Length: 286
Image (cartoon, rainbow, N blue to C red):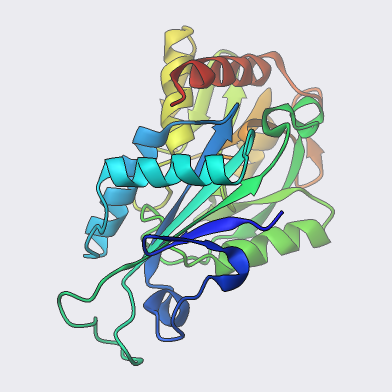
């Protein structure tokens, strides 16, 4: 089946979708994005993603072209048109097409470009890796300094992901000044006893929507949360480790740079957090 995508208000077969070669998203990576998970045909954490989208746009001084209701209607329409039960809706907003290439921002009033598409992922919440865990390797964090803005500048995370694969791992944890920042497309955590440790919010990491939900659920479950940096050595000596993201939800990490974390198997804290997150998120889905 040909996928239907959204481009600037139009619903088109993906083969007919077009964006200008002068679009600043293409030429300058001048744009932001969000990815919303779909479970059972419903959107997960949609409100949180819209709040972060608007923050990202504001930080880059890109005009927000649609209302929350319009974004929601488009997301739901794409899910229905493409018959998505479990999967993802990708949204990208760029500064638009100024008509030529220039480092200067385009004239005021230039319309942003809005693109949305779906990805069907049957059984998204039942990934086998949730029972076996991921392995990660450490790489130096060489990204720009505003990682809190969810921009389409994803080349270095992509390179880090490929390095991880070349080293036989599932993902990479990026390290800056001796401490873990985050994964290539996820937030990073360790567990010691009943305490979950994760880096505090700043310009150094993405303010994860799944992160916020998981930490809230953890506190409600009487787990301790400590927001601070941690090292790779500390992570290797932890009882458990995990990542969170919109598409992986809560995913255990069982090996770091070849060393087993805890028993080397998925632990009880991560297992329970994943169960809670999925249960509560399904209840709140729209």
